[in-house]
Image (cartoon, rainbow, N blue to C red; front, side):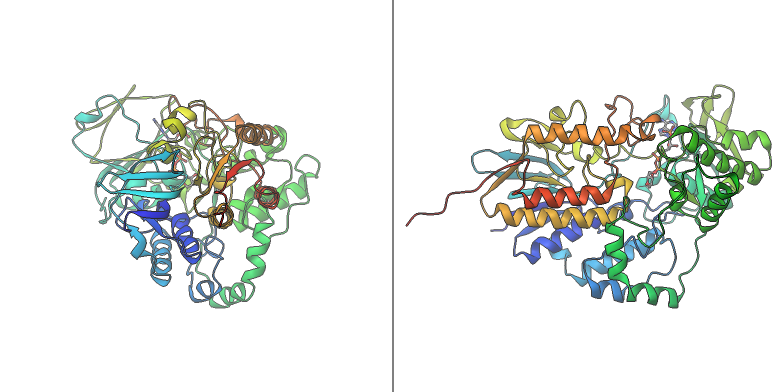
Length: 535
Ligand code: NA7
């Protein structure tokens, strides 16, 4: 029947595509709903200038199919958004996935029926389908955070959000452009927008640490060598805390106990290599404030060396713990502020008062803009889940169940919502890792679990296991410096959002835990399976 499925998957990004492929391989009837008119998820929506992944392309790719691995040729160390989107299109075509995906279709609600142990899923476009399992592959950074400033409705220019960038090219040549936000999206796009715009004003709330990407074309030999050893790389990545960098030698130094020369050498080497592994130079820098400060000051010094105006350099030099907010990876970000057509407004000193018909008025001045770019990020990790009206046993809304913050067991499941899984949900390592490694691990675990539960069965996380898991996630975070700043890991970027540290630190131990849970008959879950038919 056309409206009855074994599994409904919401979202057709990296997670949804692999989930579909995996479940279809098990012989299940699957329907994927995707709001966009193509596959790609994050890489479908984030088309802003300069959008790139900050995990290297050879690692930010699926490892589940060796032929796919061998046939795809990444061209750069860090893949651009168009290249990743082409890759996902290729994956969708290669595995004939699109025939089970309904595009331009946004899921509005999902309601669990206690009697049948099945979900009814409704879309904004009028579909109503029935499914045993509901799998939310909605992404961690997909619900745009769109702050509303006083007077915003009066602004007569164009407002763009980096995460909802138009599909047609946006030509900023000769225009006056304002950018609100200095996170990763801003840091990637500002250098490119500055080359086009006549005048670019950046409104900064929190200065950002960024390390150079040192992006470059991948040479054929290097790629061929990776392909010869891809299995080793994927295996090694699964043994790391972050799901990438498995071939890099782990740091043997603590910043606080090594001598100045060694510390300097480690930092110089990491800076020269570029990328996120900069933060892995020392074993103690995400644990101890004094160690962290040594690394942070090194980056501030780099900023002071790059930015010619000393007072501007001080404004651009972050003060919070480095790594507490996600480290950025850039090409020419700080240097962009040496340009004559680029200005910085620190909105802590000079807050945005309102948007006017012609631009932005701060406490001390007015700026005219043709375009205002909101690089203001996302309602991370829970936003996309809570924007769907999901109702579990006794009709309980997920919004109510999570009123005090997300409550998950393993980041995969939540009590009172049987037969629902989240891919890279809050409480799993997700955004603190290479997302593709985490997605593959989750998809494979969910597929095994669904096989175990079987047709007509029901699985639900227990409240006790969930409480213990939340305590575990918080306990691990409390050993680190991560909870010390207003990051989106804590939900601090969204006014009114409950502050809870959402991701779990440490991919490898988490993977082991998930394997143990499965090996122990899915401990922490209640499973009911229909009794065998008696003859
Ligand atoms: P981020 O990293 O959340 O950055 C958003 C930026 O926007 C950040 O600088 C915020 O300042 C700023 N922001 C957010 N709301 C406001 C308001 N109301 N006023 C002024 N400034 C604001 O999002 P990105 O899209 O850049 O990157 C998300 C992830 O995508 C990134 O980590 C990578 O994993 C890829 P704040 O720091 O909150 O003070």
